[in-house]
Image (cartoon, rainbow, N blue to C red; front, side, top):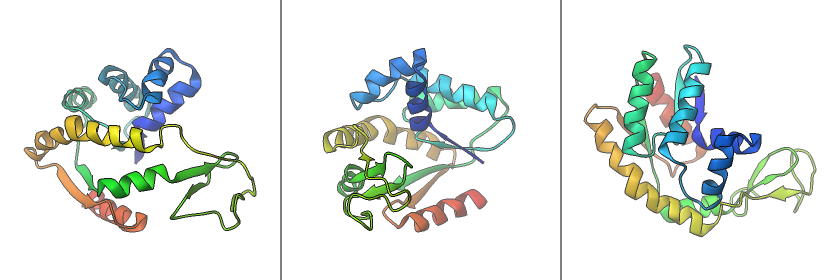
Length: 189
């Protein structure tokens, strides 16, 4: 199964300097959501590139317009959604999780100010580098803006999928292993 993360796809487009990437860059740096047309075009391209493999959509669809566009993209390719998984979270805890994360600039190993510090201060456990970085959008204001956007634009698509019996809810506040196990159980059913 292939994970289609719109965030990763958009960051790759930005890094490539493509026309779509340049358009997305300014929007992403402002902490806003990229337009439905750009995201849907990226998803359509990836679906075409992946053949018959199954996919997990990560962060898509985010709006009713994207949900409707996804239905069309899938129908054109004779595919369908099996499930929509909603991760239920405490927003304050989510803000803490996101704003505290950082990575090794050399190897990409992930860390957190509270939950996963390097064993030796300022030294990557994996490669020994002393160079760490944080995403510029991992700040409280941007995260809270995204949460407000979620409540306003994304949460309203749940009834669209609930009426088709596709929504499954997972406690997103569990450990990563517990959350992954719940999601795996859904996908295996």
